[in-house]
Amino acid sequence: MATHQTGTRDEWLAARLELLEAEKALTRRSDELARQRQALPWVRIDKAYRFETDAGSASLADLFQGRSQLLVYHFMFGPDYAAGCPSCSAIADGFDGIAVHLAHHDVMLWAVSRAPLAELQAYQRRMGWRFPWASSYGSDFNGDFNVWFTEAQQREGGIDYNYRREEAVQSGDSEPPVADMPSRATPDGAAVGAAMSGTDKATYTRERPGMSAFVLEDGVVYHTYSTYARGLDGLWGMYQWLDRAPKGRNETGMWWRRHDEYDER
Image (cartoon, rainbow, N blue to C red; front, side, top):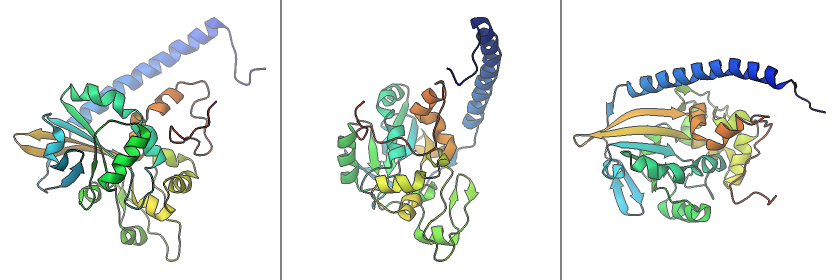
């Protein structure tokens, strides 16, 4: 016996046509939001950030590799992690398929993390990924773009993430606040993610996910856009499919694993 409402094909079609109008309205609204993103003022970047890449030391301008646009995914992988964040890993599983298309449309896609390059390379080999991944170890880059915070900031209420100030952790409290990230909609997300990354919850949550966009014009790099938390939902491919599945996201806890950690079924 079906647990969901059932009906005839004609009833389904009538409901589907009504939904179609709502979907079209959402598409038009999404197009308008894209125009608003592109209309944001550009902010010139004068700080000389340095990154370590497979090809050696690089500047932010070098990451463009001849293109005029650069998209950076801020991947949660700190120097004290034993492995990359499982949620960021699930998002990054989709990068290889699209990076080649972006690169042929004047856009470079990079992941950037604070872990040393050798650790990123080892993890990338494990995951079988090919997209470009740079280490910002020792750089101000992650801190300046609000995806890494110090323990003092965490304790004293100095974390500004997703354009809001987080509350300070009370003295003696070993459980820091958890960001409203897509994976954190489940109450166990930070604790499970920390364990899967081989670190403690406090250290794990000082790293945050995000995405930033840059443009290179007349030799000058400008920051154009950044998004965090649920703003990354559209980049998380599996959720776009789940939202179209009969039972939707259907989650009560952190169910996903790295793609090499699932039991065969």
